[in-house]
Length: 183
Image (cartoon, rainbow, N blue to C red; front, side):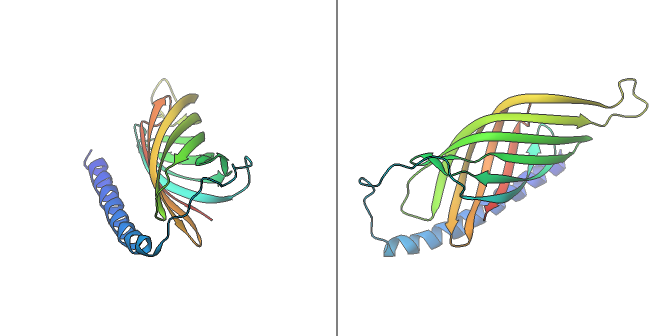
């Protein structure tokens, strides 16, 4: 339990330092920006390949370290992004392979830092390593659930960095914190 608190505290401190540095940089950028109207901008054409990225984080309700990849398939409508991911998790005598098909709404701001929120369907495979002396032995299961996700994304010239927090419902991780980079 102490390890969970330590990891959660480290994550909160890291998030606070990154957010404060980003806000300081964005405040300087906003002073130089001129607001442009997007009222006449054409609607997005649909799914497109916008890039891929890596992600790493940890979970609660499974107590795992997760690592994986995601693909940015662009905006299906203005500000609505489809970004599926696949993650491999290890820890707590369980190995997991989890895929998510989320849809995120990215909020318009006058800065490079943009909050987003959304959710999606989650499919997972969980392989549990049990005590060899246990009569139950090893077992595995498939799970299905949903995730509600919120995060912050920083647009950079060399890609997008984001931090996100997800709440799981159903047979998936309860809480997940992930840092990711899209190339």
